[in-house]
Image 1: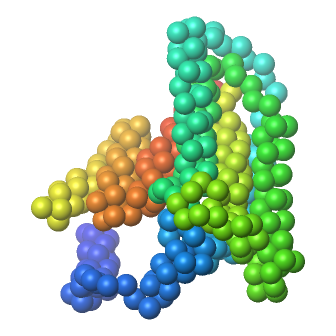
Image 2: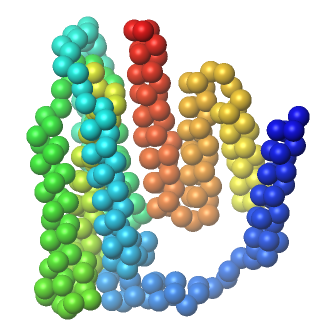
Length: 227
Length: 82
C-alpha cells in the first residue's frame, strides 16, 4: 500500500515537472536564429539539399565521430562478452526455396541501403539508416540459412578501413583549409546543387559511415544470433 | 485532422507500453515494445521529420526487436541446459 502511494506521488511529481512544457507550448511559424543559419549555410555554402545531413556531417561532425566511436565500443564489448564456444552443431539446413528467395531479396535490400547512404545529401536518410538496412539484409541471410558462416576478416577489414578513412578525410580539412576545419566537406569541389556528386565530401563521409555502421551491426547480429 | 491521428497513435502507444510491462508472455512484451517504436516513427513522419522516422523504424522497431528476440532465445536455451 505504502509502495503504491509512493509510485503515485512519483507520477504526480513527473506530471508537475512536465506541465510547464505543455502549458507554454506554441508552434513556431518561422525559424530561429541558429536554425536559419543552418538552412542558409547548408544550401549556400555546402550545396547540400538535405539540411539534416549537412548538420549531422558538417556542423555537428565531431558529435557524429563520437557517435560512431560509441557504436564501435559497443560492438567491441559485445564481441568480447559473447565469445563463441567452438561447437560444430550442424542442424538440418533450411529448404532451397527459402534460401533462394532470401538470396534474391538480399541483393535488393543491399542496393536500397547503398542508395540511401549515397543519396544522404539529397533525400532523407543517410549513413546510419543505410547501414542498418544493410544489416537487415545480412539478418535475412542468418534467419534463412542456419548453417551460414560469415567471413569475419572481411567485416573487420571494411569496418576498420572506413573508420580510418573517416578520420583521414577530417584531417584533410585541417591540412587543406585551415586549423578550424576538421571534417570540412569543402576539400572536394562542391558541384551543382541537387546532383549526386555535389556537397563536397558529404556523400563520401556518409558512405564511409554507412559501411562502418553496417559492418559493426552485422558483427553484433552474428554474435547474438548466429549459431 | 493530423492532431486526431497523432492522438490516436499516442493512445495506442500507451496501451502497447502497458501491455509490454504487464504481460507475462515475454515474446508479446518484445513485440509490443517494437510496436511502440513503429508508431513513434509514423508520428515522426507526420511531424515532417523523415530522417528521424527512418532511424526509428529501422533501429527501434527492426534491429532492437530482433536483438531482444535473439537474447530471449539464448536465455531459454540456457534454461533448458541447466
